[in-house]
Length: 451
Image 1: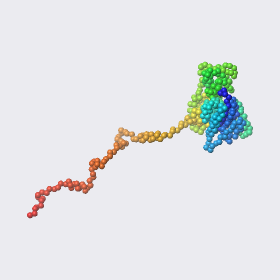
Image 2: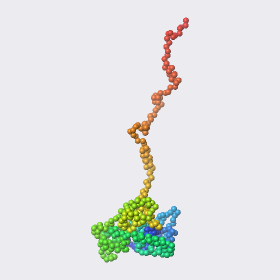
Image 3: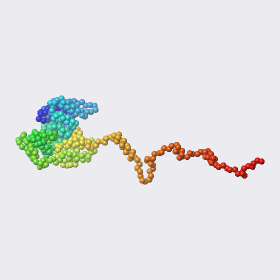
């Protein structure tokens, strides 16, 4: 990454706008995103994809920041992924036709862009992903070269606050709604907790080991770039540090690493195995999923229509009173839900008025068994016929022979020899007459001879 980066920015506005509004309760500020990307390189192209006929309020800030708006034409049958397809095709075309562009920034939280990110990395491009930790897929966060959290961008300054205030002066009737959003925003900021330093130590230890194997002096810049190579979602501000230098100083003050040299030219070294064992995190993200599954199963009927994320967080705390998202590596409960969604435990639906709605994930709805093939149906039919045969018992003789012996063919001659013919009455009398003996005449019975 020593070469100067020339970055092309692609904004999936429909996705990022609803994600920021549902999780951070604020409007999407494209200026904050562009300022963060300018710190990484030169912005040579900027595109935003949306149905701009429905986004009149956002067209002005896009024009003020010289972002080219690409119209997404809705189709009668619906086009849920219409902007995704257009964005991916334009990005690949730019990678082919503009070889001087060596970096791409995808401003979205949609996991559908993972194939695009992989393909651009195959062509040797540096990939930045800008999104929110609470709504950007964790797979997408870890698959890029650097993930830029929108939560960090909004905490840096008040750019996101100034635009809604000016808008409220123009339309006083919307002031109560904006005050409600402001109060929700403050409550959410209070719920966000800084992560504990021991949770960052496995990544720090691994990065220092990589630099030692390369025989490179572990200075600040090299250490951070190596940590981003190992985990593109890392941010020192998640641990309450305003800069990476402050983050290293916190590690030094806590006794986790050895730091030598002057400020700005720090050299960081690992400590012994005893210190390494002492900073192992106590909880892993996978451990809380079992508790979350039990809570979801207990409130299964209530989650059919979706429930706000605050309700689910309250149920988890009732089951485990000492529950804190920061103990498992999450700054807020919404980040835990985002992680659980990638594990198919829940399905999170962002909404403008109710925030995040939680539904049961695909894990609770197993897929239907596939339809049997004709061969399987034929085998089942044969098995059914065999099962329907009456079993033989020892109680008595069977009522019928299930398999009678084959009949022998009888010829006419054999039938005639074996079966006697029926006699009629006339034939019987004739046979009797024939068999009757003749009477012999006696001399006395003879008539006298004539004289």
